[in-house]
Amino acid sequence: MNKLDRRVHDEIVMAEIELTGALMIAASEHDGPLNQDELDLLLGVA
Image 1: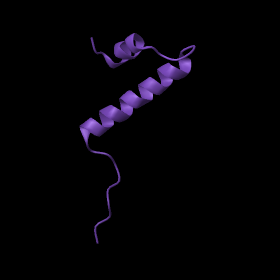
Image 2: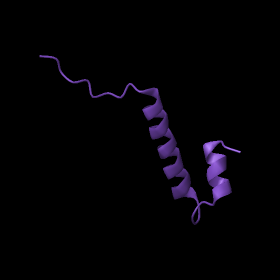
Image 3: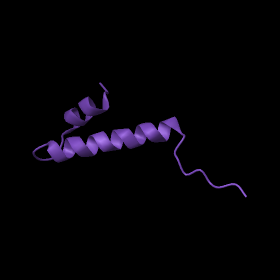
């Protein structure tokens, strides 16, 4: 019987997890809510 490999192998999922973590850290270090421009900068969008 094969054991289920529970490690994540999907690059898109891993990128989303890393981005979510970065946003959580940025939000926790920011004084007050992040505005749209700050979020865009963190996400690397114009």
